[in-house]
Length: 245
Ligand code: SF4
Image (cartoon, rainbow, N blue to C red; front, top):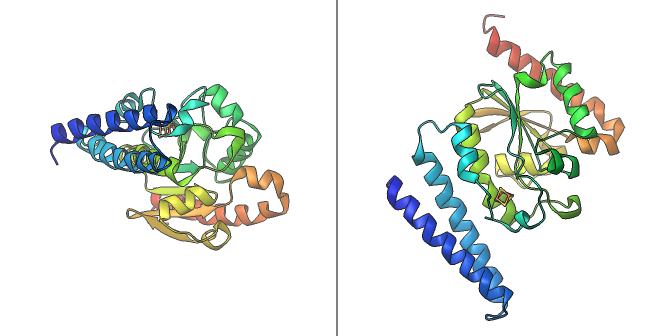
């Protein structure tokens, strides 16, 4: 698909999705409309991913953020205050990927700023790095209502933006925080307890999965497992920086 044809197809699909939403709001079509909307969102997501990848090589984060715009590709736009794109070193060797924004992140427009964020800062410092040396983002960019888990159609709609972010940053290591980040990046349905503690790969990039800081706040005894995971991450990071060590 060429860049132009991908862009045109994307516009048509967005119009189609908007039209289905309009019909659903007015009760003009039956229950199957939600299924059609879901399908349209999936197609839009896939074409958006392709378009983003075509639009610049490699894509840069500023352009990706502009392309997200005032995104309405999934229903999470309805209750968000801010799109929480990501923050940190745009050339980071290490990217942390969490689940989605909470209330404080939604308010601030920045990922991991609440109590879980403070714990993530300590986790990053435990491997002798500062927060601004890494990049931090989430699987989904808008806060789910009442901090519920993200749903599969929302993850699918938002995933192309994460894919483009990772392509732009081109990290050498990824740390997936929690079930949804690990399962999405690894295309796995295994629980985080089975995925953590070892390296996997996401598109050829070594990926370590560990528990989400918010989970650790609720289950402090699990912190020791994360410290063990961080030792592995630090070893891998140090080897990157100094391959002869
Ligand atoms: S979660 Fe992602 S796909 Fe959904 S509205 Fe927000 S930015 Fe768009």
